[in-house]
Amino acid sequence: MSTVSLQKLRKTYGKIVAVEGVDLEIAEGELIVLLGPSGCGKSTTLRMVAGLESITSGALQIGNRDVTRLEPKDRDIAMVFQNYALYPHKTIRANLAFGLKMRGMPKDEASQRVQEAAEMLDIVHLLDRKPGQLSGGQMQRVALGRALVRDPAIFLLDEPLSNLDAKLRARMREEIAMLQRRIGKAMLYVTHDQTEAMTLANRIVIMRDGKVQQIGSPLEVYDRPANAFVAGFIGSPEMNIMEGDISGGQLNLGGDVSFAVPQGAVPGQVTAGIRPEALSLTDGGVPFSVQGIEQLGSQTLFIGMMGDHRVRAMTGRRDDIFLGDTITLSVEPSAIHLFDRESGERRGAAGEG
Ligand code: ADP
Image (cartoon, rainbow, N blue to C red; front, side):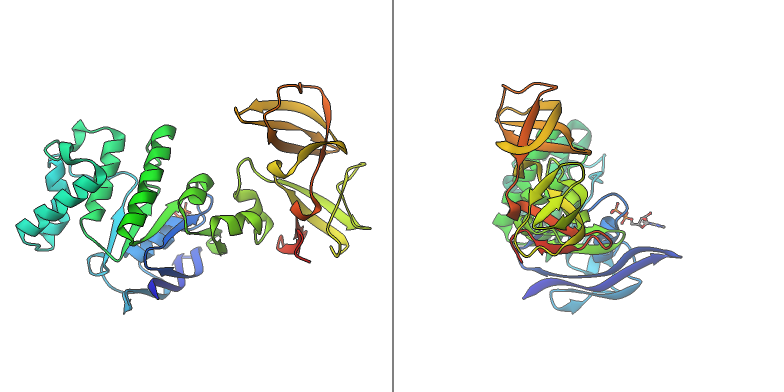
């Protein structure tokens, strides 16, 4: 049974359609990430769930109650903002207790909850400080703590890690995932960062221009992107996307570049996608002239030309290939993604018939 249900949620600002008909069921304990480029409607969707934006049409249920028109405080949600939104003159303890006090919770119970949340987040030693005396990572923890003390039906997080440096982001990401699994509450998390989405989510909701493109587990969207947009957005380094056509069991990418495709791939013009990590260095493959090399430690990323296409190929560590070399690459037929040239929709192939 779902904790939160978004039913055809739509938001317009005058003539601008910010969110178009989002349907989503969030189960108890599920971590859902809303992912997409800037302006795709992620924050607006989250803010409609929070009650910070009115819902133009559609319905929202939280815990079997219709909350479409309710105030944020009556929705059983807790939100964590990007800018932390802490009161600068109050201590961390007072910041954590503030929302509980406003709701009239008895002081003892509030103190107890603050203590528990602080222990969970390892910020007990900071409780008597003021926000100005904390680092960015510590403030982020306090912001999380303020949501945690509320014990809501769902946590709403809008780009919570974007003010942190790369290392701290990765650490906080792990902590949020562990914390969420421990408390077992639903979470809706907005980010434009596909790595964050892949590593955190039980399911990812990928949006573009206000519309949901695909909903699936990280590996589902990686293995079977619903369209060329999702294919290009999920995965790092980005998938190579090329125009080509299929005939005689071959994907022809122009010039002399061609790869075998699975039997049954329908002939015609396509948009083809090949992940950098699906390309492998083999004798007798397609020629690739090396123009860039990125050593990542355990792996090597090659950037270069395959016919007229600029392509990236990710292999295991190689230090015996140099700029200007020509190497040959091949790909398993089942690892080639095929999309309709016009609509961008997945055509199947990739071994799916
Ligand atoms: P995201 O969070 O994915 O970056 P938003 O949800 O913030 O995107 O915005 C979605 C779309 O709605 C954008 O085109 C944005 O310009 C528009 N939008 C957001 N808020 C407003 C507003 N208050 N007035 C007019 N347009 C808005």
